[in-house]
Length: 58
Image (cartoon, rainbow, N blue to C red):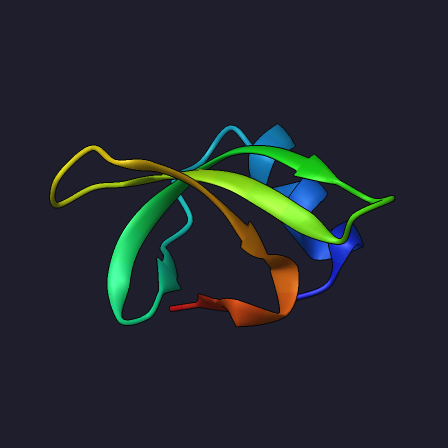
């Protein structure tokens, strides 16, 4: 996923499914300078900072 799309998802009023390593995540914040996103794993509520390229839109 690229920065622009991740930012659109965060700013969206709808719910858009995103996954990291086949687990559903909630996007909290994106960092253009580091090309990462802060996410919450919806299975165990773990907070992670992951590379944007590792996120997929379902």
